[in-house]
Length: 561
Image (cartoon, rainbow, N blue to C red; front, top):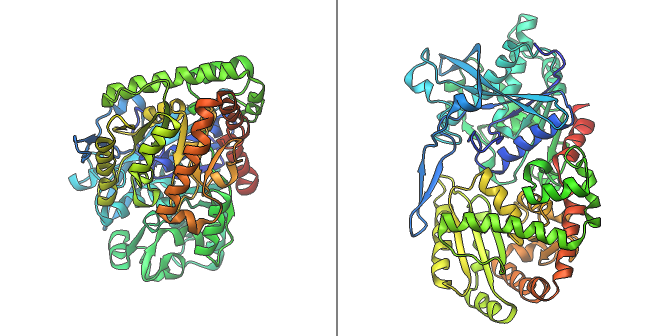
């Protein structure tokens, strides 16, 4: 069908449109931005993911912040094109039919990257198997393992059924798609007419594969018991493949990808270092994540860039010329983006936010290591900052995984702090964080706050989106911010580069309060021209570099070629 497609990009989730809820957060949004950039740059790529009919989940919040998860309802036919091809995978010795839906992602120059969404909701399958692809990150270990069989084995077979036979590189975005490597081994063995795997077979597959690991957090590395894997996988007899995919007596999807990839990378320089410590026997590079500039730039700033920097949509590096845009124009574009956000915030939360008040954005997956509630470590200190430095308001958003009770408690705690602070510091939690809300938040707040526990923030990308809209970050020096922070120029650091100190929540909160009270707020309220200068540098230095045009070009040079 398309002999020129030579790169296949596999990801359990890809976030391409708010109306296609096949993503949960950062990993899926990064995947979507990667596909968009590949289309802009005419990279001969095809993308493979799963179609989640029930999405991740729709978040509803009770008055006290209790999270309720509901299935997402969306019109698949309105967004995707059903394809006729069918392939099969084997799950627990059952033959499961797989079909694909297609979305062409077209770049700024007209080049398109096809994205294929796989699912098992077909009449030929058992009722149980029809639901295998319904929920992203749902169900138990058997359900997750079955999904990963569909993605890895089904994905390769679907590509072949669609005529993609010239692919030279297979890029696995996280370990969820690692069964792709076993599917490639199967393909090679079938060609040779044997069932015996040789070292030459392993090396041949390794030469084709690229693996990006996204987190040092154990929950991000899927592992399954050998007994379960043997039962679900069937003929592969995982116990016989122990050297390739087993670690600590489990089938470990990360180790399967590590052992069968020619190029491995982390997603920021610091994360590359952490990954090399975690997986000490492997050669691991680093390519820092980015975001798709045209996707995440708000309409007011897009209009401003169109006038001042023609061609920026196809050349993200040209955003460095934002330093030449007059400060008053930057501020006016920012005020319009802020109005859009606050109107939406009022509709969603009845918060009554004020356009003239310094507004902080805190939006991420609600989980313990990201510490989204750190700013409430000392509520009385927050009150004193309000009295000494000026008014302050904070907007939160984010979902907790349905099985993460601590993450759900964080949302309830933020609601309690909102009630405790009252009008002293206005706080609102905006429900159902998705692409649409993410675009509003990263463009409309005055300051982006990120307080993860180092070194667990592999990269982070929300602050990059904020930078494109002239929103500076106030963040812990971890992930991408170690590379993006020029103190007082592109934003501000919380604490020093001593990660042991900022890992201590009390010390980190004190550093946050000090920087907010004595540096950021005085500049915002009393030296607005200087604050706008920081905004321009955020665009020119960080927006022009931390984008997926640069990132994909690095993958092409370092990994694909």
